[in-house]
Image 1 (cartoon, each protein chain N blue to C red):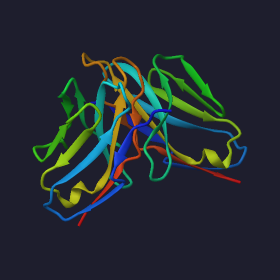
Image 2 (image 1 turned 60 degrees about the horizontal axis):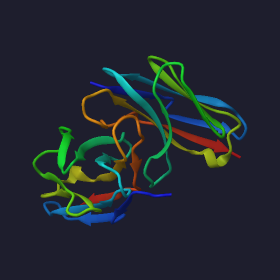
Image 3 (image 1 turned 180 degrees about the vertical axis):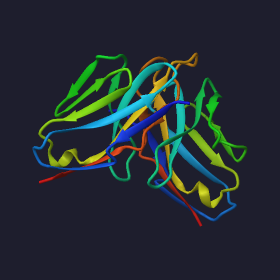
Length: 114
Length: 113
């Protein structure tokens, strides 16, 4: 069964450094998302992406965050200058089309900021 | 603002002991309510989508139901492999083709052999 893959599984970074999290959505999917989950808290929406542009972003997704789909298969989340509070699990999700289809999630990247 | 509240936070059951998990929600207009299973260190794994009040979906030992204010995930005769965190999420009606999900905090289910 097709799946969303994310790399790396764990990223350790010094505060203030830039980090790029990578995702390969399910082939032929059209809508892409990033969510994060701080330890012990709920999964929170960050940003949605469709037709090569951001569709919606949350208050968390400030100027330090950016997303890109550099080619036909990858979807990336960049944090320009990481803060301690960026430590979390980051999940990528994709869905095939509009309507009620379920979003399929990857297994996440655990980001640890030192 | 869309809100999802799940209860209980944690539930321990003996193997074979049936129970229900609750998800209460408020949303401006419901496009769909989703149940996911999350194992430790993994991403949410899709289980069910419910679209309208009165709808029910079943998969093995799990059955999900929906009313206008809440959803229940019933687990019948659970086994240890059913141990996981069960997440409820809502998706609102909007112009955009596939809106974000708003999640609850989940119910951590432990099945004791």
